[in-house]
Each structure stands twice: as structure tokens, then as C-alpha cells.
Length: 405
Image (cartoon, rainbow, N blue to C red; front, side, top):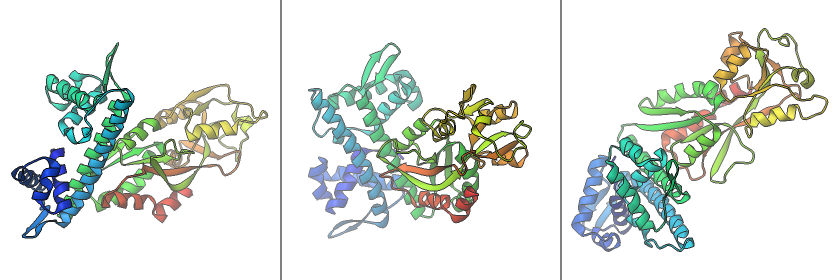
């Protein structure tokens, strides 16, 4: 839907005061303008937000659902605006005190596009808005806030930390509005919505194939997106509202305090190699024996990398002379099949390759070694009914038991 922040402020004030007359001085709009704003919202949403009575205007069930999302959205906008003003005061700049009430959705969308593309021309192409309009909207935000949002460098422009604060606030706010629209559709029997999952390798290879069929049977009209990439990139998407849930190995400690890692299960690790590997017929192997072969290892900071380093931390074991750093399972699979390389991996992640007789899993030399698998969400996340259901499916006894085998 088309986002109009002024209309949302009108909606909230009328709901708070049960009156258009009472809301008028607080949003600085005339009564006819507020009436028109509410009417436009109801048409766009296809829902009645208020019951009109002689004693005032009262929020309907649909209105309560959407009001919850709008309030969360405006809270994000206000928080982003206040953080921006703090920076302006620190830099001895002056912005409007009610900066967050003056921003428009068009300005914020322009800022998002410029920050994501790093270029005014590309931002214009992405949004379908002329470059002069994109430039003007972004610069208007600078004037309202009193802070610099873009700095010139050799490649063109570079967004400041303040610009990134505003972008995160705007994206979280717009995400809330989209979720509100989905909840209204569900109320009206039109179960639609979206679920965007940030999936690390185990989730892509095993967890989601086991979980999503049941979810899609319950919510056949939902749009599902699976996003892969490095953990840091997925975490940034989660914190900006682009991703709803991130599934993968838990980080200890959590990298930032605005996320929650909800435990799913403990994932046992094994030594993985091709079926015809010189060690494949062994029932067990030592770290010293494994050190004689090339190793495929995870990037620094990943839980699997820490487990690899623990395996070879004793002087007796030594360390492999040859290592290849790789996080792509497709590449790992190919390297294992075409060489005598070995790696530390979850048997679940290579489930289909093991079943097909392509790869062999040997016990970890140190016994039962496992990593914690978690579903990571934002601490202030307010999931829809469908998103809650997906989290329940991730924690169903059958799935958890299957992972732990």
C-alpha cells in the first residue's frame, strides 16, 4: 500500500481521542482534512477502522489490529529521528525539534534507495522517480534534521552513520505497515503475507525442506523468500526488517543485544569425506591422522571454524598444512568428491549426499561434539499469526528429533 505518514498520525490521534475534533490541534490539520485522511486509509486497506457514533469515533477490530502496527511503525520513525537529533546537537548543528513528525515516506524511500545503491542515478532508476526528485527529497531530509547524510568520496557519495540510522528506522517502520496489511487480509479471510528467511547452509540443506511443506499447506497464499549469504549480511537484513527469521548456528555470545537466539536443537558434527577416501573404511580417526590431509574450513568467526581450531589445538595433533576456506556447500561438496580433502560438517547438511553414497561421515575424534542451532529474531519482533506458526513448526518434536539423530 502507499504509505502516508501524516495519515497514520491522524489515525493514531483520532483513535486516542475518539474524536476528529480532538485530534485536529495535535496533527495541525483541519477536521475535513483528517476526515479525508481516514477515509483514504479505509479505502486503501479495504477495512473499516472506526465505528462512528454520536458519542465519538471508536476503533473497530480491524482498526485495533492496524493501530498496533501503525504505532510500532511511528515509534521506529520517532526513535530514528531522536537519534538523528542527538547527533545534530553533538555536532553543534540545528535540526527541527519535531523532525520525526516532518519526514515523509517519499523522503525516506529516497534515502533508502540512495543508501542501498550508493548513487542518485541508480536510486532514481530503482524507484522510478526522476533523479532531481530523488536528490531533492534526500537533501530535504538533511535540511530538516540538521545533519549531513551523504559525504563525497572518490567513487561518488557515501552515506553517513546518521543516514544508516534513518534507513534502518524507515525500513522497520515500512515492514510493520506491510505486516498490518497482511493481518487485515487474514481477518477478512484473505490469508496473504510474506515470510523471509535468512538461511545458513544447514537450514537450506535440511531444516527448510523439512519445515516449509507443512507451512505452505497451511498458508498457500503466503510469499516465501529464502535468502542466503554470509552471517553478517543476513544479520544486517534481520535487523533492518528485510528478513524475518535467521536460521543457523548460534553465536556465543550473541553479536548484538537487539536480537534473540531461540534454541532449536544441538547439531552433531562429523568428519566428512568422499566415499572412496583412504580413511573412509575406518571406524574412527585421530586428529593427527586427519592433519595429514587437506582441509576445507569455515571462515573466521563461524562456529564451525572454532570447532576446527579446537580439534587441532594440541601439539600432538599438529595442524593441517593445506586448508581451503569456503562457506559454500556446493563448492565443499565438489572439493570433497574430487580430492582427498576432509571437512568438519553436520551429517544433516550432507544428508542427501550420504544417502546417495557419495560422502562418508566418520565420528568426531573428540566424541560427541555438537553446535547449537537457533532461530534468530529481533528482540522487539512482533510476528504475525502465520510467522508464529512457522516458529512452532521449527520446534515440533518430530523435526527436532530428526535433527538430533
